[in-house]
Length: 294
Image (cartoon, rainbow, N blue to C red; front, side, top):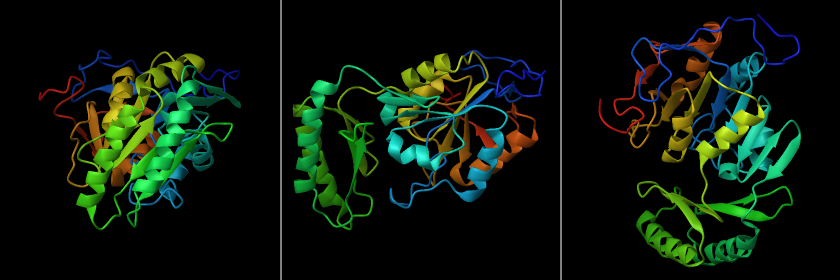
C-alpha cells in the first residue's frame, strides 16, 4: 500500500524477483522497479548531437516525467551538474562527473581527495586546446559547483581526418598520464575523458542508494563500458545499444536499442512498474553480467 509520508511510495504491491543473484536472470524474470537509474549520453540523450544541442527526446522525457511521480529517478553520468540537471528535471538526484559531485535534495556535495590534481587538469585542458586544432574537435569542460574545471572530454567524432586526430589524441593521452591524470577511453571510440582521479559509477550508485534509502528494485540503464560497474550493483541492468555495436563490451542482463528506450519505459509504466524479461523490445544479453557467453 502507498505510504503517504514517502513521496515515491507507489500504490503497487511489490513482486519479489524470481532471482536477484548476479548472473541469475532468466527468460521469465520479473521484478517491481522501485528506482530507475539512468546514464545520460547514449542512454536517454542522443550521441549524434553536440553538447549544446543535446536534449532528452520529447517522447522519452514525457514518460520519464510520468514515472517520476511514482518512483525516484536518478541520473548517474560523466556529464557535469550544470549540464545534466537542467536537461533532466524529472530526476530527484544526480551523480555527476563519474561520482566526483552529487546533488540530492537540493544539497550538492563534492568527493574529497582530488583538489591537488586540479592544476594538472587545467594544464592538460590548455594543452588539448593548443594541440587539437582539427576542425570539428569538441572539448567539453566539466566544471564543479565553483565553476572550476575538474575534468573534460576530448571528442573528435566530427573531424574529417580522423586518423590524424586519433594519432594526436594518442600523444595527448600519454601526456595526461605523465601528469598523473586518469583516462577513460574505449580504443574503438573517437573520444576520451580526462579525470583527476579514478571514477566508479558502481560506487556512485551505492552512495546514492544509501542516501535515498533504496534497498531493492533498482533498474540501471547505460550504454558504455563505464556503466559496467553500476550494472553490477543494480538488481536489473539494461544496456542501451547503437547501430551495429550491439552490446559489445556491456556486462549487463538485457539489451535495448536506443530507438526503443521510450517504448521500453512506456511499457514499464503501463505494466505498473513490473519489469518482465519478455518485454518485446529487449533481449537477453548473451554475455550476461559475468562477461562470458551463455
